[in-house]
Image (tube, rainbow over the protein chains, first blue to last red):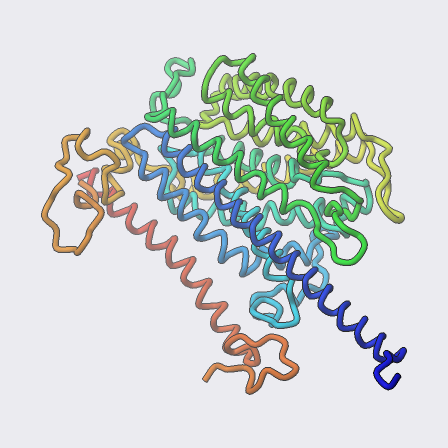
Length: 455
Length: 55
């Protein structure tokens, strides 16, 4: 009987098992967000294809390089100050202590004891990159790349994440005061980005030839098929985006929303797919246009994303169909005001995002939040929707106005007419088509460019 | 050089210069300068390209 387990040895064995379990749970959290982040990269592959396709061939590579650089500047700037803004500003404009999120903090790097900060930072950085890229498509073919990068850094690493601190943070004032509900970021990402874009477009002005005697003309994409495939890639990436919007908790809690309300991926799955389908149908009915039909997938998902955890799937489908129709009407409306939004970003993201936040107040008012937080309300959601639009529009308009006054916002008319690839880019997208030989001599080994920069 | 730990016992943050706030501050500054420099260089390239077509 000397080998019989003692109470102490059983306790030690139990403790060891619990330590292993907890470590695996922490690793599972990391694995989940790692792959959400990876899938979100597909959003940017999609934006790249869709913007290049939406451009005329003379601007295809300029649109592409602008898009790639947006990703490259938002990631480090989100490290430098974006993550700190999220952690420091849940109460409004007065920061709280968040030293651990500053770039020189020891939390912001490899740490044996921290299996959360890096992976959450990465997911949020990709949310920021997505937000910054929403602006990118709308301004193609006439914005200066330098101006665009300044604007996208503000949008992707400052503006949206301030809105996120207010409405997408467990202590954000929109939640604690108004019960604000926006689980899939319809407001904090899409409404903010869409209305920021509207502010920029007002100052940027339309492309040459877009309006003749005040009548809007169609500027055809040079590759509509590439655009459609890009949009479908964005839809794929949305599953990483929305996966990143749910909180994978350790212990007995399981999945929660970012507001700590219980939910699960099954809820997200029902309504993401029903929203996608509804949006496609709505935009098709309203437009019969391939570009808008595919954009309808985005409209549909965004329209239900704010209440992704709450809606009956059939209600989500109906919301998405109706929003798809309304988004096309909204795009036509702003075009009638002389706004040239090359890809419909203001309607797809701005209008739909605001509308989605508002609809949660219509259909889910009274739904409780956890603890002492106020329940979801019509008034709270309406105020939240207005705040999101304003947080986007005001800095978008203001910063682009400053750039315009400095003559740093838009390319010269001659460059626009000639094509930005010809003027700025050291490569041609379709050299044989444009009469440039595909084989040229070069001093640079393996040089991919096929002509000299500029004229 | 740059190592913040000498053994893996009781280790937390272990990345290079984790125990050197001055170095981390300089790296932050360096990263910021690169971003600003990139945008400035693009603006310069654009100005030069646009000047060429105006001639």
